[in-house]
Image (cartoon, rainbow, N blue to C red):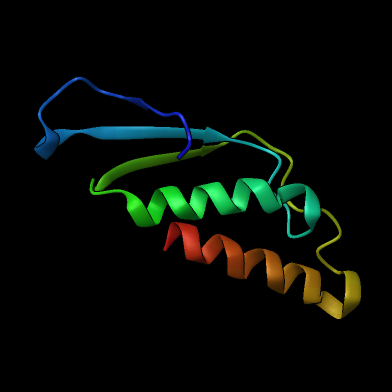
Length: 80
């Protein structure tokens, strides 16, 4: 699990803040993607804030747009 900050309140009103960066569709973002997906799937809280600090996937147009499709499919799994 990723380390996270959370407000010290009861669980019904708990909000978790996850701050991350360097998230792309290729190898450099693989670790970030894995841990974010794990955190989102295992979370029991409805109030989760994800804050992306930069380094969004580059070269989205590579391979006829497949790189961009891969990136946005991964993002959708986490934020939807």
